[in-house]
Length: 294
Image (cartoon, rainbow, N blue to C red; front, side, top):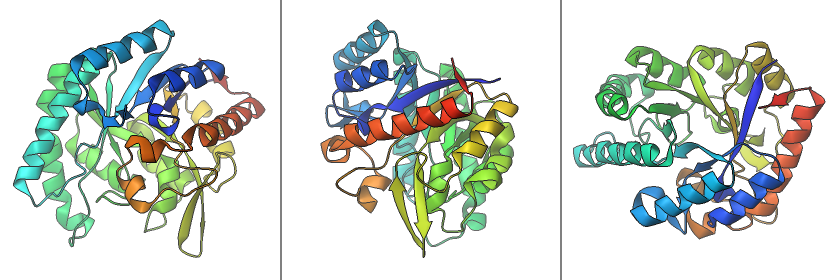
C-alpha cells in the first residue's frame, strides 16, 4: 500500500504561517506548501523573513513540500515578460534551496489567440531553457494544467513534459483543475492516465461542473471522484505528496482573478474554515479506503 504524504498550501488557510502550522499539526499533516505569506508572494519577502518562516516550519516538525510559484503565468509573445519570468524561476530555485524543498510549481503561459498546437513549439523552447537552472539548483519544475494557460488539461501537460524529456521537468497533477478545463477532460481516469508516468506532485481540490459552470466545493462533495483516484494511486504505488489547495470558501466565492492569481489577504479571507472542512473530508476519504499517510 502506498504511503501518501499529506500537506496543505498555507495561504488557503491564512497569510500567517503560524495559523497554517497550527492547522497542519492539528490534522497530522506532514508538510506545508508556500505561495504567499504576509500578503506577499514569496519572492517579495526579505531573506530574514524567509529564514524565520523556514525555522518555524522546521521547529514544528514539518517539511516544506513545494513552492507554488507564478512562473510562466505571463505573455508568451512578450519577450520582456518571458525574460523576467526566467529570472523569477532562478529566484524561486534559490528559495527552494533555502527552504529545503525540491518542487517548484509553474505553468505554460497565458493562453492567447493561438491554439495549443500553434504555441506548442514556443512553449517547449522556453521550458527547455529552464533545464540548466533547475539542474544547477537540484529542483524539479512541476508543470500544472490551468484553464487560463495554454495547457488546460492533463493531456496537454503530458505532451509538453514528454517533448521536453528532462528529469527536471515533470507534471503536477491537479484533478480538481480539470473541472475548469474548457475541453472537458475527465479528471479521472483521463487526465491521470495521460500524466501517470510523469507525476511528481499532486494538488487536491474538488468542484462541481453543471451547465458549463464550475463551482469549487469541499473535497469529497464534488465530481472529481477521489474514491477511485485514491485507490488507483495506491495500486500504482504513488508515495509522493497530496497537497490540499482548497480554492473554496464557505460564505463567499473566489473571483476569476483570484483563481488565476491566488495570493494575498483577500484570497485567504475565510480560508481556514473552508480548508478545515476540506481536510476533514479528505482525511475521511483516506480512512474509508484504508490509505496510509506516511
